[in-house]
Image (cartoon, rainbow, N blue to C red):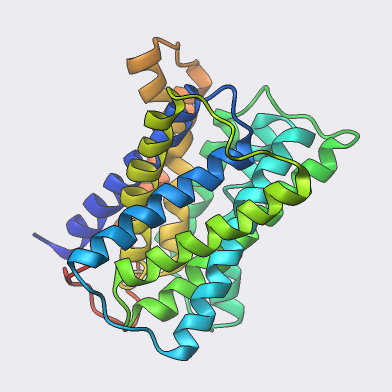
Length: 297
């Protein structure tokens, strides 16, 4: 299979997986957002640590260990800022500003890492952002405390950008599972501490919530986010960070299939633009220093 097709299929699988998170969250109306995020990380890290009991992973260097701890904290901050934004601004604003990670990664890669981009990727990134804005048209507001919420959502994008940039460095000589299990663990601890400070009781949930919390940890996290960590070894962080821009499109499609929710015309139009942009990005991506190949997790 050609290299670009393999990359495209990996990222498409990751996109579909992470898009299920909003669907599963619909079945957890009684849980606070921080609590959901905590259990998502707790389940994911438990599954990966259990797997490594069967298939041991190589040890990290002390330098990589410190960087991974930092990435885990940043991932926890990402979730905390995003969920905080949802309390202060509209869902549309939070969604758009929280998916600006590729803007941050592109700027850092260009001006700090001195990497160049081709025109196709720049065009694809712009198309994806425009499509995402169009999808959420009608839900925006920019007044009062909503501006603070917008700022928090934008900050959540910065945290995610930093997570991916750190992951690219660590993944050059560290396995995906060895990296991901620790990142999810630290993110979970970070979210637990945030829950303590904010008074959220993470251990209060109903029996029927267990299935949906488990699925949140398994599909969008162990499958989706772990595939992003896998891919970032071979392709630039900005390419990986662009993929979640398609999440509202897939999430709307899943809600239509499983919840019979209608898909607005603007969502369809914006979705076509976003997916076109993502196709341009993934098929014209510039590889990271390591040549792309299928390696072991």
